[in-house]
Image 1 (cartoon, helix red, strand yellow):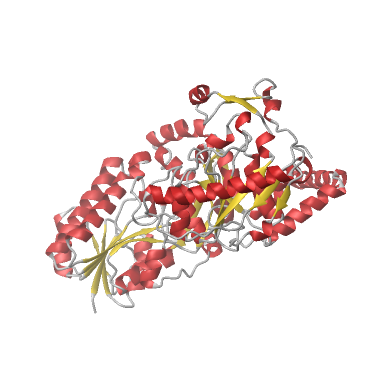
Image 2 (cartoon, each protein chain N blue to C red):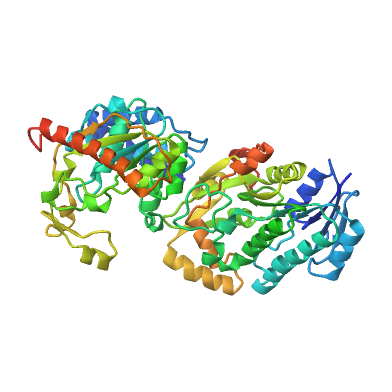
Length: 305
Length: 297
C-alpha cells in the first residue's frame, strides 16, 4: 500500500481527506496544530513546514504521495507570517519532494487566484492569467504558491504534479473564508452587485483529490461542483440575511476595521462580492469522470444554522 | 404581528393594482409569462441559467418593454420563422441614439419566435462596474462582450445578438439614416470558430426615432461617455428629450448564412465574408424601405 502525506491534516478539509484516503492508502500528516482524536491508523505530526523537523518527518515516513493543503487562509496571523508560512513552506515542501523520492503531488490551490474583475469572462479555463494580486494583494501568497507549484510541474516531469483550483468550498467541517463569511449573523454585501458564485461541497472536493491521485493526474485543473447562483441567493439559501452597504461607505469602513483587527476580511475581498469568478471544470471532468454528489441545495443545507 | 400587517398591506396593494390594470395589459403580462415558460434555456433549481439570467426576473420587469413593443412602436416582424434552432448570431443595423432597437429585437424573439428565444446581447466592458444596472442586465441575459463569453454562449446553443456598427451606428446623425457604417469583424471570426449560422436582420423605424443633428464626440469623451449626440429633443428638453418618437418598427429577418473557413484566416478573407453579411443586411433594409409607405404608421 502506498503512503500518502497530507499537510494541513488537522484542518476540516484535511481530516475529511485523511478519512477518504484511508480506503486506498496508508495515511500520515503534518499540521501546525494537533488533531485531537485522530484515527489510530493515521500518524499526525505537529510540525511547521518551514522547519527542519518537517524534513525529518518526510525522511522517516517516506511517503510516495503528498497532498499539500497546509496553508493559512485567514488573516488573523498577520500578513508577513501568512506569506512566509504559505510561500516558504511550499518551497520547502517542493524541495523535500525532489530529495526524498516522492512520486505524486497534489497542491490544493483555489479559483480565487484568477482574481475578481469586471472584465472576467464566464467559465475561465486553466490558461487564464492569475491576476488576483492586482486587486487583492492580501492573497498574493496564494498566487505565488500556485505559480511555484505550476513551475515545479514543468521542471520535474518525473514527479506527477497536479494543481487543483476548486471553486468556493462549503461544508460542515471546512473552514473556508467563504464559509465563514456566509455564517455571519448579517452578511455584508455591496449594494447593487450580485455576482454569480460556483460552489462545491467539501466531501466532493475530497473525492476530487482522491480521483486526481487515482488517475495520476499531471497538470493544472479547475474543479467545479454542481452549479452556481448569485451571491444573494446563496446567502438566503444558507439561512443568512444580507446587509447591503453602499460601496463608498463599505470600502473605508472595512479598511479601518481590518487594520484595527475587528474583522478578518481585507478590503481587497470586496471585489469578490462585486464581480464573478467562474471557472470551467471540463478538463478535470474529462480526465477523471468526476461527478459531484452534493447538489447546490444540499451544499447550502450543510451551512444552515 | 407587524410583519403580518405589512404583507397584508402588500396583498391589498397588489389586488388593487390588479383590479386597476386594464384587461388588455393583464393579457399581455400573461402572454409574456407563457412565452417565458417555453424558452429552451437550461435553468437551475434556483431559477438562474449559468450566466445569471433569470426568467422569473424577466417576468416581473418585461411589461414596460412589451407595452413599448405592442402599443408604442407597434412592432411588425417579417420572416421570423426563418430563425434556425440552436446557436445563431443575429447581425442587425444599429440606430436611434438609445438602444431601443436591441430591446425590440429581443422582445420580438421572445414574443414571436417559435420556440421563444432569449436574445443575448454583448455588453460594453464598463457595464459590470455599474451598481444595479449590471445586475439588471445580467438577469436579462446580457454579458460582457468578450470573445470568450460569446464563444461559450454560442457553443451552449444560445442566440447572440450583435450590432457590428456599434457606437458608429447608434449615434450617427439623421442624414445618414439607413446607411450602414463600418462593420467590425470580430463576429465573423466567432461564427467561424463555433460554426454558428448568421441571421441578417434589418430594423426599420429605429433610424427615425430620435433624429440626431450632430455627435459631439469631444464632449462625450470629457464626460466619459461613448458619444454625446445633439438631437431634436436632447439636451433642449432635458430628460424628456431622450424619449423616442412613436415611429412604427418593422423587423426583417433574412435567411441564415453559413460560412466556411477558419477563425484565424487573414483579415482580407474575413472582411470579404463580413461584406457579404453587410450586403445581406443592406438588401433587407432596402426591401423594408421600399415596402413601407409611412414612417409613423
